[in-house]
Length: 409
Image 1 (cartoon, rainbow, N blue to C red):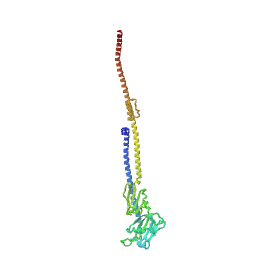
Image 2 (cartoon, rainbow, N blue to C red):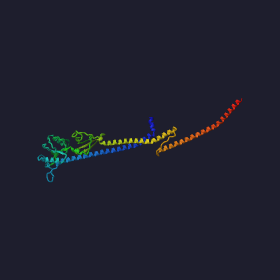
Image 3 (cartoon, rainbow, N blue to C red):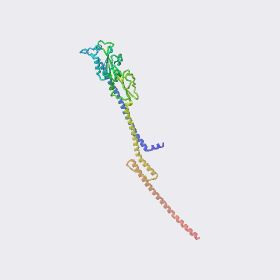
Image 4 (spheres, rainbow, N blue to C red):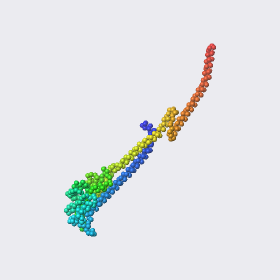
């Protein structure tokens, strides 16, 4: 405690602390304010950018499904006469002539197959006898028994007039095929004649779309190893995901954000579903964390530099003062030969110069007083001598007289 009090009384310590506080407090406050402003701006910009990306992906995916919806409607583009005013009787065309829109079914399927580069295979199942027609780009053997046709047809039972999109699955009904596809289906309804309550389904069209379209659509979104993306329908069936083992299954996704995950969701009209992005905030803002660490490191370096500079400046200021104090101690002890070396024209140099003059004058004053005192003492001594000389003379004469009297007697 005594040491601390002694240090605190030192102008060197006070100046160092003042220099550090005056320099460090504004630096620290400004750095923190700038860092928070910068990080807040970057975080908002990044989140807004991801939101825009999710909207953009949703828009592109809806457009893609819209294109496939239009492709499936090619079955309803028919010709009957030059005016094209009457609808084709699809029941007769399919069941008797094996045609769709006056075009052989196989040719129609081939036309559909090459209407889009992502379509790998096309199928048509005639309802009257479940006969299967197909065209494919896959260059391996096809196993019709493995095709889940009845399962696909059953999915259209409740919505016979709508497009159905089946989740991503392996096309293992082709020999040694390892591709993942998404199957799209639509019923061919005979719309000729009088409308009926129940649609007259003639057959069902299916076509496999390469699941790589999802990767193409999401290629602009750079995902980290801990980031997740899901394409879900209204029943939480996963149509596409970068998480292994969940595609084609019902998977409940939590859309509540937390400290670790940033969750973004955007709707998909054609699937009555949504796109869900679960982004790791740690990975997303990793570079920002590095920047924050760099700023804190810079603050620490500046603090060390301020401490060193404060120490150096305070030493530069305190050393001459300590020299003055040392010489004053010598003068207090009686050494009037003490002198301070003057270098410069600053206030400390002027103080040293004044101290030297004071010592010189003090020395001259003491010398003058000493000489005056000696002279005074000499005068007193001389006066005393002048008083003592007659007394000694009278005493001597009296001694002589007494000796003479003594001998005379």
